[in-house]
Length: 460
Ligand code: ARG
Image (cartoon, rainbow, N blue to C red; front, top):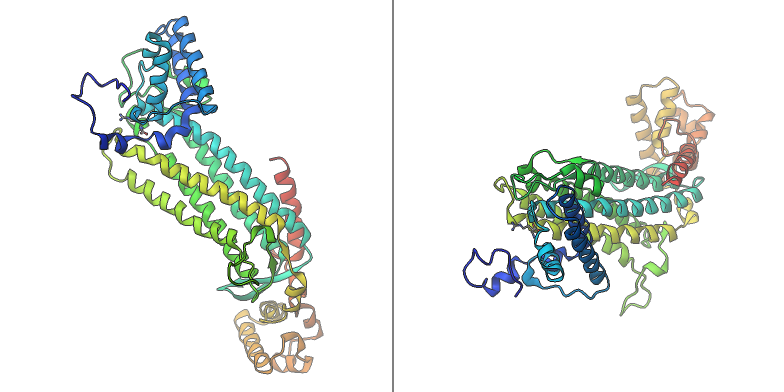
C-alpha cells in the first residue's frame, strides 16, 4: 500500500473496497506525459521564484524525465493504491529524490493539476483528430474528382427527388466534416488557458508566477477565477459534443453506404478488404465495418449524456465526481478516432457502379421539378406549373413511361406554352447539367467545388 500524504490525518488504512472504488489510475495512466510536463513546468516556476533551489529543481526534473522513460518502456510499476497518475508519479519522484521531491507539490493541488493535464492532452488530441478528419476529407475529394461527370439520384425522405452529380453527393460529406474540423478548432481555442496556480480552489498564499507556467506550457492565457478553474469541465463536454457530431456524420455515411451497396441499390461497391462474409451463407459480403461505425456512435452519445449528467448540479468547487470525466473524454475520442480512420480507408477504396446508376436514372421522375421551372420561364406561375407537372407525372405513371417519352402534342395539351425546347430539360442527366444557382449539386458546380476543396485541403 502506497504511503499517502494524508496518512497523519486519517486513522488506519482505507477499506480494500475503497481502494478499488476511488482509483482512477487505470484510466488516467495515459495522461502521464502531460502530468510530467506540467510538473516540470511547475517546479521550474517554483525555482524561478525562490521556492526551490536550482539543485532541487535539477533533481526533480532529472527524476521526472527518468520516470517518463520508464513508463514509456513499460518498466514503471503502477500501484493503484496511489489512486491516480498524479500521486503515482509524485510517489515515484519522492522515492528517487527524497526531500527535493517532497517540495514538488508546493502551491499545487491535484485539482488544478488534473485540470491542466486534461487540457494539455486535449490540445494534442484535437490536432490528431483534425489530421484524421483532413485525411477523410481528402479521400472524399479524391473520389469526387473521378465522378464529376456522373449523375445519381438525390433523395428526400429516401424517395427519389432530383438528379445530382455523384461528386456533389461526395462533397456533401466534406462540408459536414469541415464543420467538425472548425468546431474542434474552436474547442481548442477555448480550452487553451492555464489553470495552474488555482490550487485546490482558492489559489495560494505563496507567490506563484502563473504567467511563467503558462508560457512554459504554451497556454494562450490564464484562467481568471480559481473557483471556476478547478471545476470547469465545459471544455470536456464541448469536446465530447464535437465527437458526437462527428459520430453522427459518420453514422449517416455508414448508413448511406450500407444501403447503396445493397443488391437493391447496387450503387456502390465497398472493397472486399472492408467486408466480412457469413459462417453459414457462402454468397454473403457484409459491410460489417460500416455497421460498426454506425453502431459505435452509441458509445459516443453515451459519453455525451454521461458528461452532461456528471456536471449537473455539482456544488461549486472541485468534487470527486469530476474524476469520472476522463473515461468519457477518452471513450469519445478513441471511438471517433478509430471510426474516422476506418471511414477514410473505406471511402478511398470504394467504387460507384456508374453503369447501373445511369441505367436506372429515368425512373422516379427526378426531372419533374426542372419541368415545372421550365414552365416558370415561359411565364406560368409556379403553383400552377407544379399542378400541371403533377398531373403529367400521374399520367406517365399510369402508362409506365418517363416524362421525356411524352410527345410534344401530349405535353402541349397539358400546357400550351410548352415548346420543343422542353426536351432540353427532360431526363435526369440533362437536368443535372442545368442547375445554375450557387452551391447547386449539378455537374458544373461540383467540378468547381472539387477544385476549391483540392486547394483548400492541400495546405493542411
Ligand atoms: N484523480 C482526480 C481526478 O481525476 C484528481 C483530483 C483529486 N482531487 C482530490 N482532491 N481528491 O479528478
